[in-house]
Length: 449
Ligand code: IFM
Image 1 (cartoon, protein in one colour):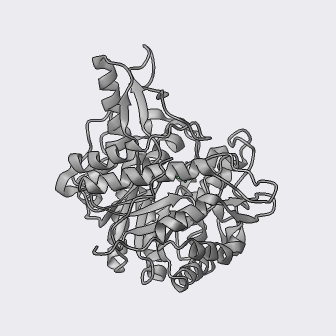
Image 2 (image 1 turned 180 degrees about the horizontal axis):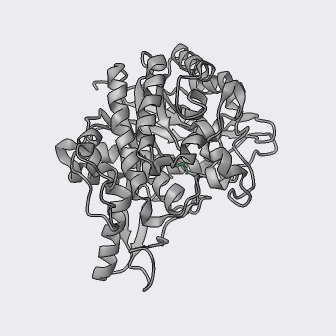
Image 3 (image 1 turned 45 degrees about the vertical axis):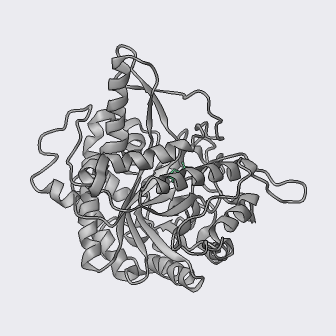
């Protein structure tokens, strides 16, 4: 890690931490919550690495006041959480379940009282199971249902949420949820999953209209991006890298910013993209949410592969406990690359997730030291500062995550938090990265800026 103090950021820069509903809340049946695709998936033997579910997770449902106090102690100006659709519409349609919305109403008020801006994500992968039973994101109707749900949430929270994020990482929902089946709902359709991409985007566009109709703004969509590094020097490797880049980095962003779909390595069934859809999808947004974890190595596939690329390990990088390469320069490359690709179309960016998993354990005194996480965050903040200096408009940064939590198919085996959670008792212990991050976010603004 650099011995220099972390770089300075402009006055008013938004500092936050992020979480998502199913990963922390628990309270799986509390206050009328319905079943989501993740409840179903996690209960299916063999799907989750440690056989766990998010039924209790970090028990945030009962401990949210303690978690708001942790946010206040951290000194962040914003908290990004997600609303669980099955709490608001247990069956995926129909009127709001008031008791479910009450929870978020209280949370938003508690955040405001603590001086922390609420940033709400509407969809962080927890589709109500009844909607999946009716086709899930493969069904066009799910886009309309999503807008209906957005309207219900905006009607209740629209006056206090400071940034709305419609979808989190639709590429992950597409690729792992419906492409390979490693995530809920566990469907392995490979490229036949394309309608999932289009219907998420359409749902986003319809939800933007619903939010605007309630004066709920500003509005964003969050993608995860991964700069592609070509492994190999042949033209076939470059073509494979371009195909992967189109899928991972452009499939959701090109249409969102008014460019229509890029050339994709799959056929699109006629009738999926209808007249007028692209205009709905390209409704102006105020902020682009950018999640960054690591770059991806890509080369040409072996003969007979069902995919037009092969993902390979990138040599020469340290790795997190998830096995992901640590490459802070990838964040600068990504941000400057987005600006180069989209130019004036690009709205201001907020980095809505960035972080790392390590096997953090309390020492004999119960303290949790996580120097690797501090080094990771420090390196990425330097890369972010460099991107600002390159002229990219970035107005916020959220570390993933406030708490160690339930990491999807990896269950409780990955710890991403600034705060350690004892998953047996729920006890929270701020790690050394929590104090370090507090120092960064509460640093006085430089004189003269
Ligand atoms: O935990 C996830 C989060 O839900 C979405 N972005 C990546 C994180 C780490 O895998």
